[in-house]
Image (tube, rainbow, N blue to C red; front, side, top):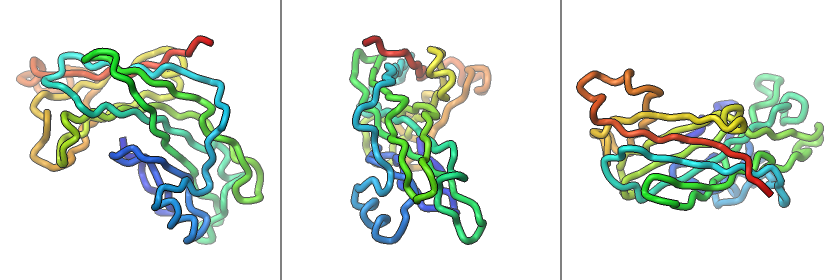
Length: 216
């Protein structure tokens, strides 16, 4: 899943390679560091406590997936009180980050990882007050072999459903595996098999995402 880059601020986000990410850069030096892998202003919580199991289940896949990667999205919920004021608007820009989530292969159809709701550390970035982070949801990306140009099958489960133990299922057409006619195509799937043409409904696979509170 790719995050949007808003025109009002520069964000370093979790891209297709799922590297480290950061909030908006405060200045050119910070931006250069971020491009080199530095997190910029964003800080991870050194001792997160709110752990949830993140389960990805793949059904009826047309072939194996060598790349199964997870991510967790976090957003600052009080950016107008704590963020840097943009001269062009007189308002603070959005502050958001995605963090990679390592997924362990349990079987050919199941992968598991751990998401911490409190992964980001609340902090005062701009001397305007403490920015408060909130978990927004978790996503997964599947690729057949990881080769250049292959289709990226993407899915996302929102925080409320994730925390409550609900599930989110996306359906994809087999014909997009391992790649579409367009290189590096991002396939977000559909939320029901009925949304595909009748002639394709017999050749679908799905990815189901679920959160489950981890027991001590």
